[in-house]
Length: 224
Image (cartoon, rainbow, N blue to C red; front, side, top):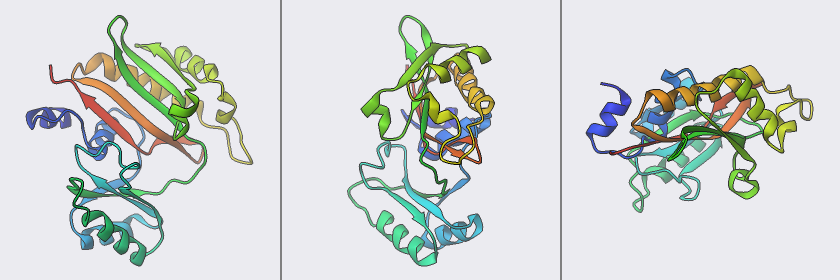
């Protein structure tokens, strides 16, 4: 049974962040190294295996706004920091924390967003733009109707106002546009292949050695 089938069977309308990234990884979209753990000792062992620094996040189907709920602990550099952060997360009683996500920490100021939405008239459409906190503030995003050609994907990159962010910035290498194009093309293919996927939001996409990596993601499912 696939991740989508399991989620629909239990009546979920969204995939958890970890499930969302597992689904995206199955389709070929690069995501962070991460794992789900339940206990404090499991979290500590996973952090040691993954290597510091790490990120801890509360995990669950209903937790789609973790930043606002303060359910993310960033840049944890040793066992003590991980232990304290884990205890803060699992002791929360105001939100349904089911598991703890142990995630690779990816640094970098450049943040992009990509996604999929369904338009009543045009069908599945791919979105791309400036990510992180600036997605809603600057609204520097563009849309194209799926399926996307490679030329379409490249054109989307050139269409945002902040397109210079894709080039070399402050001594950092330019973003690998071919890899970024692969992500956008794949999102369009998902929209055409999986009718139960209503929406995808990958925000942010961060840059690791010039290559885009999905750091956070949400897949919304159709219940119809």
